[in-house]
Length: 265
Image (cartoon, rainbow, N blue to C red; front, side, top):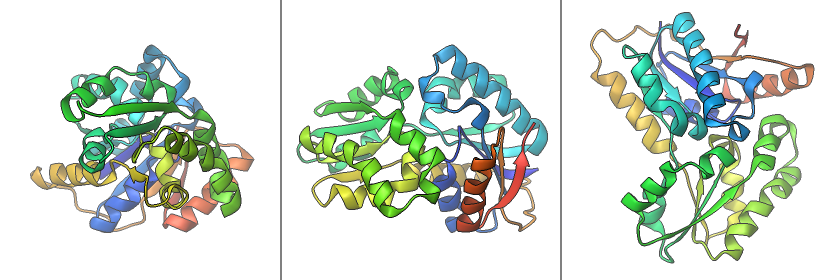
């Protein structure tokens, strides 16, 4: 049994895991990247639901997590309610685009949302905008190319290569006169500081990491009979691995002090 299991299509949820451990170093955690089904953002709703239910079932049976953090916007907006219905004994925390936070900092009332195609096109964003940013214009940009770069290349790429990869999205929102830019796919957080550096002072980069982690910790703290942590490194698993990807995950484990768990079958 572990305190938290983090689920993403690949490396996107790692910033959520590492941020939680900054706040709660003794938490017991596992991380699972469902790499066999990457990318989720180009799948239909039905395909996303099928994939998420399959990997979630494996996670619950293998690790018995007290809380599952669905550290992927696409997974969350398509499946979080279904997961809570099918697994009532497991507590889930989802990630959704931080439209409310972006609206609170935007002076121009022009907000950019960059995410997967499945997240950008999901009607959930309309509801968020109507509730929290009704006086703002929401500028949308799906960016599967940048997501693929982050998943497969960014951890071993040079800074110059990463800058070249993020410049198109930053320039897009600058040309649209936005002053807030939401990272609506968790993968983008792996390059968050660099994106803000390229964006400059006039375009604020917004993400949901603070809210998601605080919510997860509050839920754990509310539970009785909390798990006793083994005080070990968090374990990192994937569902498919090539030789090239193993090199990348070795770098990730070393950089973020994670322990390689292998392929979860």
